[in-house]
Image (cartoon, rainbow over all chains, first blue to last red; front, side):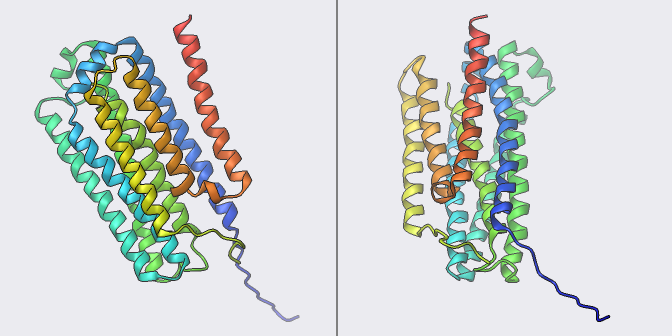
Length: 204
Length: 94
């Protein structure tokens, strides 16, 4: 008997994308739960939330919003670029997105650093002397922006992996669902921030 | 093996989408300069919802995806809204 070895690569782009969306749904529900906690405590301690939110830096928050929106556009454009066969443009656009992700984290570092300098961090002595509502606000602020920043880091790693796969032409004009999925993940990070920004930074 | 009738969004469309998102961001910051009292949160959430819709439709490509994706995404957002509404009915009128 002859040994037939035939490798047919199975590929189902629609299923890949659907898998990514299912994952995104779990992420939405995760943050949705946190938003529920936020809104219940906010309605319970409206004045404390008001005062506490006043201490957040609206300027850094706004800059980070702009960074995420622009980077969402660049990663979306990279999909257009790769599909029209413009590999180097796609690489540039993904590179810009990764750079913006890094910038976001730098801003976050300074923002949190400033809070730490003022002895505001989870478990600090100052935090424990705050009113209950303020304590809850800062607890939620650190947890939600922290979890979001973690998603930024994951998104960066995801995009860096994609960058090299585009470079090696593993992702190309014909096979690019991974880049699309990376884009979807990055837009999710943007989506969450669109709600975090007004709820945490702008309610004062 | 690539999908047939694949829609490719133009750079121009993405540019317009970004411009409108930035305009809405400016608006949401701008309205905080006025004292809208209890309406503040309503306005903020309304603008955020519009922004999210734009991101999902254009950046996340749902506008040009097949019906199954539209339904899935629509239903999950609907679920989140329902959970919030039911929770607040329970919380506020208990």
